[in-house]
Length: 181
Picture 1 (spheres, rainbow, N blue to C red):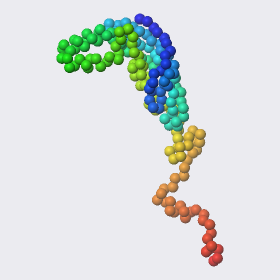
Picture 2: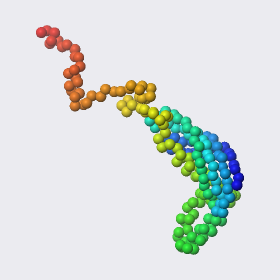
Picture 3: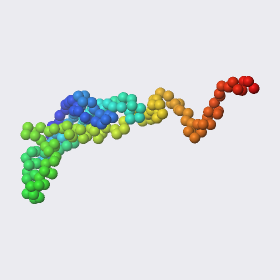
Picture 4: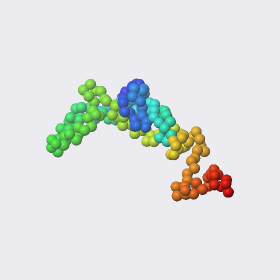
């Protein structure tokens, strides 16, 4: 078992359209690498800063994110042996289904590509609808004004069925006919 700490640059598309970790920003990895029968078990934490916008008021937000990751990276010879065994038992056509998880296989230099596991862990940990604060009132649906800046904001809405009568209540200028009488 070994521990490894590193600071790496975030890959592209590490998030959603609303919030994510910007490409090139620092990610702190604190990992534990354990040798097991099937391969190497990589577990630990990833820390980074997610940036995005509030889903209600569209203000910029920044969140510190800490995510746990755990993934088993198989030895190449173990996956080749299990694929051969599977082909012998079921036929050659089913061999490809066993090799679908090749992204979690150690390469020839015993290196593991953590990006797919990192992406799976980080993106699922991000909030689906991020908020600048829990009680964010959002924007006015009529004019787009920020409701946090004007808590008493409202619009007088007249029922369109009564709008013709509204003109009768408005003060009008006195016409020339009424002055002459």
